[in-house]
Length: 223
Image (cartoon, rainbow, N blue to C red; front, top):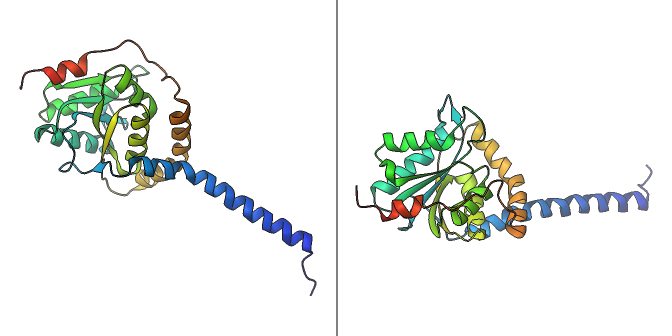
C-alpha cells in the first residue's frame, strides 16, 4: 500500500488549519456580542428601572404583529404595568406602502393597556444598528431596556451600547420552531455586520431631525 506523499499530507494539514482559522474568525463577532452583553441581560421581573423600553420590530402578518413581535410587546406591557418603564419606543420598518410595523405595535400596546401618550414611534428602524443610533441621536434615549428574542438580544445590547445607550436586555421566549432556529443561525452571520457597525459607526439609512416624543412621554403626568 502506497503511503501518501509528504507534500500531500502537508497540503491537507494546511487546508484543515485554514478551515479552522476561518471558523474561529467567523465566530469572533458572536463572542464579542456575548462579551458586550455580559451582565446586562434580565427577565421582566429583574429589569432595572430604565424609564424607556425599546421594542424592535419582528414582522407583521396581515397587518398584525407576528407571534414573535407580540411576545416582545407583551414584555413591554409587563414592564410598563410594573413601573419599570414609563415610555415605550417602538422601532420598525415603514419603508413601503401598506407595511407599518410601528403603528401595528402601537395598536397592540394600547389594546393591552399602555396609554397612547406613553408610546413613541420610530418609523425608520430598518435594522438593529439604525434603531440604536436613532434612539440615541433622534429620540435622546440615554438608558433603556431593550426587548427582543433570546437569539437577538445580545446583539441588540452590544449595538446600542456602541451607539451610546446604556442598555439592558430582556430576552423573551417562543416555541422553538423553524423560525427560532433560523434566527439563531442568522445571528452568527449578523454578528459580523454588527461588529463592523460598532467599529465604524456608519450613519443610519435615515437620521432626520431630533424628536421630543420620548422626553414628553417621560415627563407626562401619570395616566
